[in-house]
Length: 123
Image 1 (cartoon, helix red, strand yellow):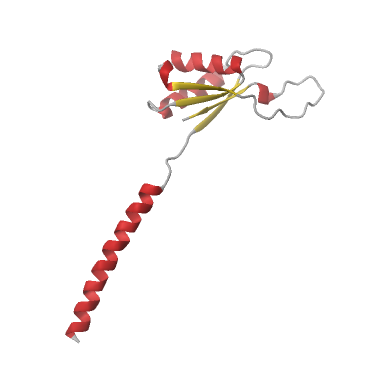
Image 2 (cartoon, rainbow, N blue to C red):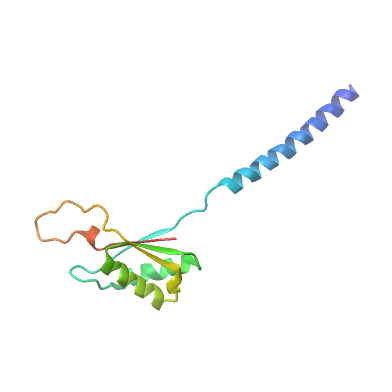
């Protein structure tokens, strides 16, 4: 009986160590989360609204030295990049990707396409 108890305890210790090692491997295999913010320029211009500037400020606070990628039309990306630099993000850590994305169907009622005014901020 004593032999079986000793074998059971030893087996449990080995299994416990293997379980901890597996959990650590799993924790290391999880990809880091990616943050994304979306801002829109004012209709009919490339100006940033106070809401857009506040969103950019939140992105700057969350980025904390990470590489920032901007995706949108060249004019809108330039406006957002200028605001990021103004708020302290180093120019060298900003990557601009000029991509208009998939345009939304035109409503024909004179409203602007919001997809042409958006800039995605990711890091």
